[in-house]
Image (cartoon, rainbow, N blue to C red):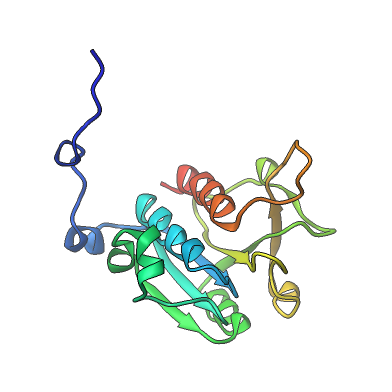
Length: 176
């Protein structure tokens, strides 16, 4: 008979070990995200896939906060993060350190994520934009590549935390 595993049977690493484990070369930039639940979900997903760091830009809420913790479930303690007022400053810093900047956005230049070749020899930064406005207009010219998730239904977008989970998984699979 199938039984669910108990928490202690999952053999998860602790925060101290997580901090020492080699991360995949992927940084997540949250560009003016409004919802604390979306921020918390991004942290929890980043923890699951050993993401290097999250950069919270503009109005994006920062830990510690009860509403972020509800979705993060402690991942704000394991995942490295920083705050940057200006998204372009974060982009510029990452570019200077050799990261390719990937905007997750529907644009005239975007390509389906399924068509993008993720190169294991590169470092990437994924930008997820505001729930209503998307990636800020000021950041668009500084982004190297735009990717979108193919959608087949009537809606034109996904919730940012769902989108983040999909793209983090795609990059984590390719970069691990």
